Image 1 (cartoon, rainbow, N blue to C red):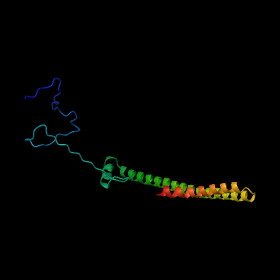
Image 2 (image 1 turned 30 degrees about the vertical axis):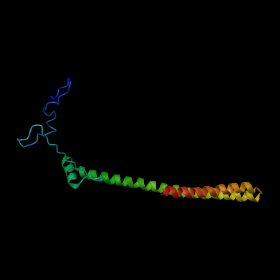
Image 3 (image 1 turned 135 degrees about the horizontal axis):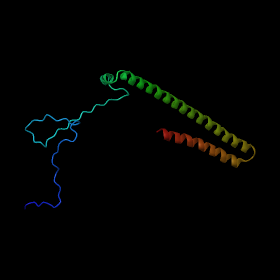
Image 4 (image 1 turned 90 degrees about the horizontal axis):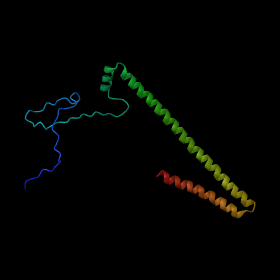
Length: 150
């Protein structure tokens, strides 16, 4: 059965001249290839770290004299800055941990001391509740600390 053309069916666009010839240089293709065959070549260069490879630094210097030394100075300044920030954060974290231990110890002493004082005043039931809550809080802190460290 012959195929019918549907009304309004779109045909593929005709090949046109390259709108950006300066960005897409002509390819040297063998003459026996059909005109629809195209070759796409892409080169990707990447590197890790703050500095480009030495050869690329040399090319920077060719374009702008002295730019390689400026790039290296920038990387060194950035490294010093990052180290200062990390050292500051490390000191803050150490202080936070130390302050938490000190305040936790003081709250524990206050709770247990209050329980002892209340028991000496004859308030045994209230002393039991206060002492029990203090011990339960200490256990809860250690248990949740172990869970958080996993």
